[in-house]
Picture (cartoon, each protein chain N blue to C red):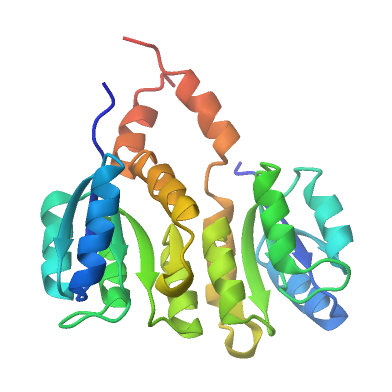
Length: 138
Length: 139
């Protein structure tokens, strides 16, 4: 059986946490939540979920800082920005940090959103890819 | 010897084409140019380029549309946006298409730009990765 993919949602809006957690759980994901940036990065370091949904504007540590740390620390989690607070400069910053997707809460297309979460969960983590490649006979 | 990476620059502005072609050539890359969106996409479809450097605002077809088509058609060329004209919606579209980097012409650091283009060029294309993975003996 295919394993259950794990998603972490980092947002300080409880309604967002509840509605997206319920939706993704119904779709077969194992979903955890974090209510501020520090709790979010700690859960990312500890659990390395397949995908994290990250709001840009968060208390204690911003979404941009979380994404920068995930990148620097080479955590094997794909990031989706799910926001209503990002500006163009934020978008350019996260593009250059290598996030997998950006969705605006105000006009989200649930089908596209779900497809993207599923696609990003299926990406082979870089550590695993290195193990595969090192197994190729020279 | 390491092979020379191939770069395509798509921009309407001849000064930009010349300046960046000269600079990247001096840094060891093989560089071609296209001066509108349709010519750029046709060159991309040859599949000969490791990286395409694309302006958002282009005549005939815009840079986001080029990136979207390259992605849909499975062209193994990574896209770097180099623009003076991008809006927030363009950046979001670029993220969701899988563009690798975004530079604003007005505040560019050329040595960093050249390094980033080379880093992107070194990424193993998906088709090649598939061949490599298929070479792993099954256990």
